[in-house]
Length: 379
Ligand code: FAD
Image (tube, rainbow, N blue to C red; front, side, top):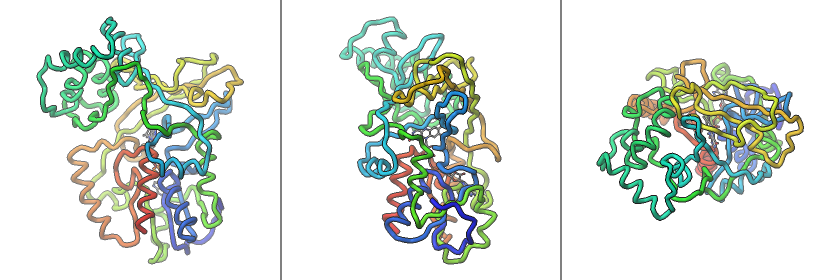
């Protein structure tokens, strides 16, 4: 990976050194044999997958929230593993509600512990059917109804309602049912959060993965470089792969797309292990944060030599310009604005809009990689 202050007389410019931009740059250099410059307004590569090693504990922490690589796509897995080995971490999530920790997504342990029962797997479907039938919801119109139709009111109120209120600052009655249409629900003690076959964390950390992706003689990386301060200087035939916010590209002329932002509060503790797992959700609405991350658990293969641990409390908040955009809110108004921006984007020649910001959609990392690979297939 070359870091240079060279001129912008280049045939390909990738805006954003996140997983979308790095994938596109790699393919242009490797498969098309063309020079490509990658710029990022931030001072680091990796986009929101960026991580650092804490100086006090030596623990790697993910600066924009815990990131677990997981995929069902053999193509994505083969591609990404060219740049790093992965450990065998399998993600599990727990949720604390009313002082007790439960498995999440809801499984047999959650139900038995919550209701004080000893149901067997074959009894769960009936039990939940009875619970959800109490409300007689056949066509859920919003998130609350969808959740109740899946798990019944009691589980909904304990595990979904408060968390959702904190996460979206919106009554679940006013949120789309789609948000949890994929909420997995288990009749067994299975507690892996993701069921996909390929999963793990880069053995040497995310930034090494990105360094390796961008390490090609035809790729030049320039950090701390804002696209909008140089776009007027670009040659007309420069192909631009833009992974920044689509509304910003068009100077917000149809209005801002709305996002949720996050605040991360870190704390170093004088204990080797604080919560025994990497992510603990907090469902009670009275607890102001949505979850606590404890990064040491993502790498059980590493020794925690310091005997201390690093935790991070995550708070959800409304996004405003200048904040980091994390989750697209995706209201009807957002979708209308997005359609207008997409129409404008079609009319711009030589610019490809990609990634979570360029397309205003929630992408897991593997989906972002796949979309970037497919974009390059079509070049
Ligand atoms: P980004 O990573 O956002 O990269 C875009 C880059 O463009 C940024 O670095 C930005 O600085 C740069 N940029 C923007 N504007 C400009 C400009 N004007 N000039 C120059 N550069 C610019 N996915 C998973 O698979 N597993 C997980 O566990 C997971 N956890 C997540 C947790 C949270 C809290 C969130 C919000 C997302 C999570 N994701 C996870 C999703 C993951 O973060 C995305 O898939 C990934 O970041 C998408 O990469 P990207 O390159 O499209 O965007």
